Image (cartoon, rainbow, N blue to C red; front, side):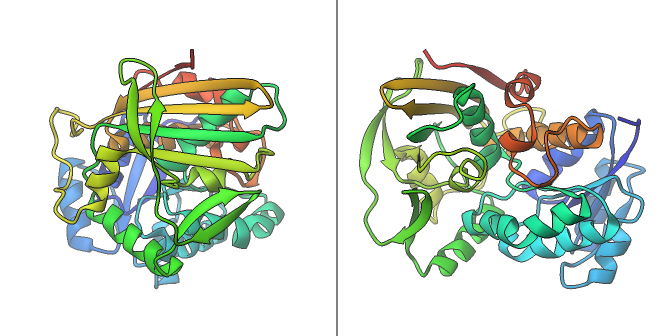
Length: 343
């Protein structure tokens, strides 16, 4: 990596975008602050003197082209990604730079694979969607757990969050996704996404200690159902969410995240428990840490660093576990995330 490479952050002044900007600076990159609102960009720049601000709306290709001039890569942190991903990817392709985003929206990620896979491959471009807590981390954990297995019968990803205070961006993305689904729910089964109107079951999940047995909402489907099956032969991918977190994100009265430390992180903690089954055999990985929004920053910035210095396994549109060496990537996340085999 060349020192002080410029990396554009679209949606830099958003909740997650701010964490990403700080992490880029910490890692020796020079963030370029990009977004629709010039005033918010200027306010953010006051906290980072010397950084360039480049206002650009996704409806203005010329402005996006100017925003990506001279950058080495672009990270899209602005949801809903159903509205922002395609225009920013188009701009990245025109600029000839890698694109990464932190999308948790299932359909938006599926669209990225469906609409850009061939073009990115032909252009020799790198596009990494869902390089975040949801979608990216789960995919890395599943890939590491699979090890030398080339296929499995089932993947289970259980999210042990002690709470979930959604950001305005999370709420807006959820609203857009719900509208796209016509109020239906989504699952990945028999090798494909299915939409349904069934009520979600409440189950018990045996998280590793110290969390232990907890109530979870079954089929609380997250972006892992897009990222994992893109490169792993698994017909069933199921995700679960602790009931307290599911209730928090679903309630209109839940407040936004509140910082509890000097890094701006909330007091939210997480434990991600991954189980992969093939026949009677079972493998697993566990990851834990603090604040799902804050921890997205080291995930996506580590991905930026690896893309720019060539530590990738493929090009085109690829998920985290497909394009990176999953065990090595997970080790690099310390001390932000603690990762260990499931016992």
